[in-house]
Image 1 (cartoon, one colour):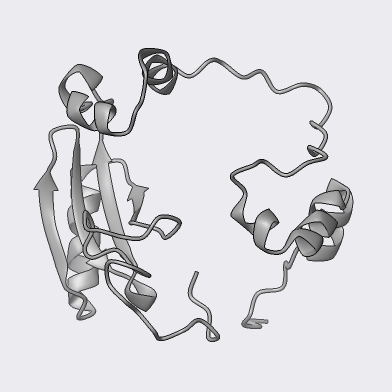
Image 2 (image 1 turned 90 degrees about the horizontal axis):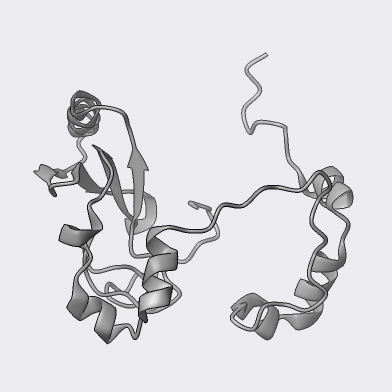
Length: 168
């Protein structure tokens, strides 16, 4: 998210991805893709961005999606794409699966996640942070206090519904 207090210290390949498919440190965002319905909308966005002086790579056809790429605020890699369902037989690389140590059961779960039926009542917040939650490890007191807040308090106290510009 763009914010005036964010640092200007960009180190490509570390703090920011080195291109839409490039290297980036774990925990940093590689890129974000936004989906539209048609190729024409992808091309319209390309031309709209270019008309405002923003360089755009593409459109490219990846086989299962068609995309454009551009640099957004603060050097973030952004993608606008449209497309269809992925045929995993053609697009899931067995070498990558092996390098990541993904077993057959994990791969099946990723391709066909089990259905989740949301219960009638909200699910309670876990009492312990998940072991991979970096924020909980680096700021445990602050994160524990936030996680202990009831959902209605979070909604009431932390929501911001006033736009930054008064157009009234």
